[in-house]
Image (cartoon, rainbow, N blue to C red; front, side, top):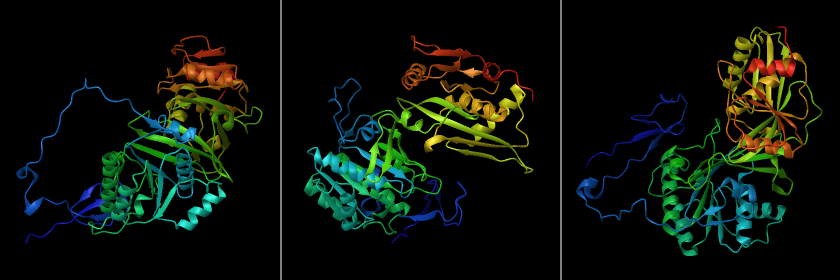
Length: 457
């Protein structure tokens, strides 16, 4: 009998290794390499080429398909993040830090879904039924006709789901589930991959929407092999800072809608409350105009969002000055500081620089470059920008400003919240009048001169 060879996979990056090692040579992560069960070669050791299967039906691009049907969860912000609602036979992966509110959100979603006349089943492998009922009573959801189960054996779970034929299944979490034909512990690379494959196959075969909860690593990525994110239709990340009550549900992948769409929630004693106007909420605690405070008109998915960017520049007593960033890319900050010094003659040597996105929001779009530069110069010169002003624009390495997308939506949202002036790139084209005074600028040096006058370094 031929000896079965073992393979090893890194749970952090998914790289394959021939033997176990303490550190992954691909990503450098320690203690992340786990044994993966080998795949079968077919009956009696024959390859797939030696066993002919049935012929599959082929289609073409001109074939007519039925329109995509969506079901509402009853939570508007969750429906928005999913692109308009829940699609039948879809597989959704939800990740987030421990204690961020994933189970609370999905329990609220399942109960709202069941109250809408649909059949929902919540399967937990981490909590007892009494714990889930206790949370439901605290949230005032114990009257919902949602079905509940606590089990980790996937074979028993799938047998029950096929008999019940629900519209929605929530698995909390995928790392606790196990299949009996894989010889490894729950949470291992082999188990997570096998469980995900079985659940996604079940969703497509039975036409049931399946939501999987995934644990995250210390880097914020969903734990397990990356192939799981490729298998599912939608990947949602639940973000937020522990010190803030705001929570952001961000779609990083969506086969049925736009990616980077967000839903905004507020954590309260009665659970997660959806926020229909996040711009007003993020700016609600903004004080009078102060040095280092600038309002950025951004876009998340299809939604314009206004956030406050705060900067602090102070003399440093250290040999290497600090560069601390919360909610933005630290590498992008280094680039902006280099442009300000090289193209505008503003040196930040010997100064500690702190940058913060207020409200626990995370921004990734390059359109925030000009707002960050404005906050840094404002903090350095101790001069505040006008309180009725918003700023947006992408900065190039030459110091010029590049045009950005969805400028009309940014201006419209700004005007709705009481702002009357905006600084934007000069090459930006507007489709119509926005009702705001738009100051078009060519480069960063021109912007600094218009806002702060001539600066002597």
